[in-house]
Amino acid sequence: MEQFLNKETLQSFIKILTDSRRIAIVSHVNPDGDAIGSSMALSRVLHNMGKNVDVVIPNDFPDFLSWVEGSNEVINFEAEREKAETVINKSDLLFILDFNDFDRSEEMAETLKGYEGDSIMLDHHPLPVAPCDIVISDTSISSTCELLFRVLSDAELDNFIDKSAAEAIFAGMMTDTGNFSYNASSPDTYRIIAALLEKGIDKDQVHANVYHTFSMSRWRLIGHSLKEKMVILPELKTGYISLSKTELEKYNYQSGDTEGLVNYPLMVKGIVFCVLFTEMDDFVKVSLRSKGSFSVNEFARAHFNGGGHDNAAGGKIDMKLDEAIEKFESLLPDYKEKLYAAE
Ligand code: 5GP
Ligand code: MN
View 1 (cartoon, rainbow, N blue to C red):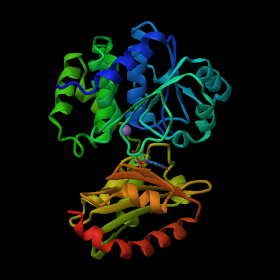
View 2 (cartoon, rainbow, N blue to C red):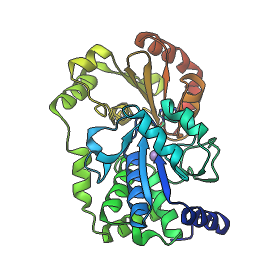
View 3 (spheres, rainbow, N blue to C red):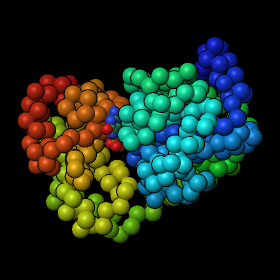
View 4 (cartoon, rainbow, N blue to C red):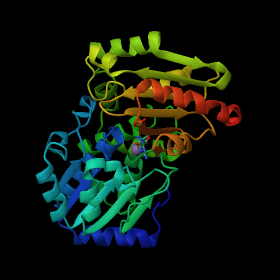
């Protein structure tokens, strides 16, 4: 595999790391498999190097990631604010993983903006804005976990990746590519998987831990969504699903239960753009996916206070659920040309 970092970045990366003793790792709100995977993997590597390291996340992570080694020691900012602030402020190096704008950590953003030590960003989202001493940002890499592996290899630290760290890296690579169904066409991705397998990971077990641990109520919620709530607008090549708070409560919604649900309309022939609207306490969460050249990052930035990648983005809007859907439907005709040009 070719060297990924340029010489200068690599040298400053190694120097900052060598000079640091207390290290904090932070990731984005509603942490996903890539956020938790990269944070836990880096945490183990740094621990194996003899560093003092803590992981802080803005809020809780879904249950399907609780098997990741060490995830029970993660500090949840929402639940333990004082402890989280102390850990961040007392560290001499801060790693920002899988996000590039402090505001994506919501309640934690002010603490990150006030932090004065060294910082390193490892991320794969467009338009990095958080001011960090080292910014390692590449949108062509499908997950932060893959990026982390490449950076550690370049720095010749991959011998510190043990089996647990390798499993966490694999989990992030797997979840950010929909189990290698999209953004997963780089040969290097599979070279890295080969290296992880050589570290002894049980790939099938990681897959089962993430994808085969649904509750019955989660399946019922999916069934309800597909049968009653999926709307397909073939003439606009668009589909969407919406879920109200009442529906979520009826199916005993737990964080993570709607993970992946957004993708189903894209499986309908001809559909290139889809959205999941989820009614939360005081806003509507919007998840967007697309095929080909239709950029949901642009759509989310323009209309739903969000962003993300070209084919996967998110956002939110302070509206009632039916108002958000009405707004969405009214925007679509203006995008007809782009939707038809997508594939
Ligand atoms: P999801 O739909 O799974 O919540 O998010 C899909 C992608 O969009 C993720 O890569 C995530 O980082 C990004 N994303 C989700 N919500 C937001 C948001 O509110 N703002 C921005 N900038 N990105 C988001
Ligand atoms: Mn990611």
